[in-house]
Length: 290
Image (tube, rainbow, N blue to C red; front, side):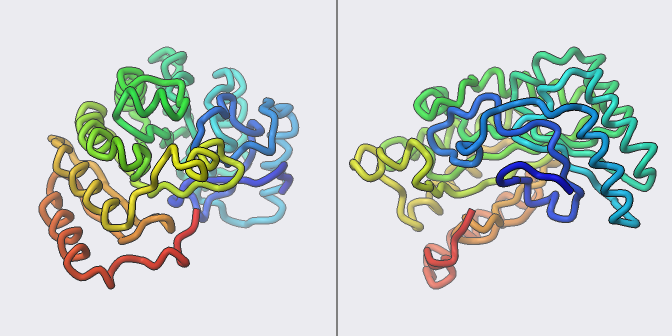
């Protein structure tokens, strides 16, 4: 396979064939993120993308899932995406699902008919980085999207039958705004009604703009215990009627949480309370990673 720069994918796509439909991230301005700082965004030549599936077929006998990278491959026109999906169907007929990173604005730009067309031709899940439910925090980290736009995007995915997987980041509000981050994130999840919620914990690399604010003392990171308190507050504010798979078991997290909401809400809160009482359950900082 041919890759340009570092390649990232959601944890649930660990065993998927990853093909770069775009290079980098079209936004690439979030202060906490260093994922695509070494790349200038561009759309790959569609013929090169299609050739990658031929290369994959020669190398792998069975490919169950495909993930289209980089940061927001849904920025592609439906014409280009349909060519890719058609190629997957003909070259990898055993493929059961295609996943994609999707920026909220890219979802909103698609018509309901375009999204349904993608779903009918194999696009099964879209991953959206929401990060926080607070409008002020989203503005501070230069996310470029409002909570209202997050809700609109998620509902469009749901209506089209494309599974929605959204990610939030514990600690993104720092010590000054942890409660706002927790409460508003829980409320936003309730409004979005996603199929999956992933909760990561903030880790800032030197390449990320936020790193300088931490060094200068302008942004204070939460302690592990404070992260757990914030997580509990977030979960308390999630009120869903339909099933949502909740996961906070990323390598960055201090404890592992797995459950379905709303069914497992109280169990998740008890697990957090237990870790706060017995802090030996909290992962040592040396073992956390992105």
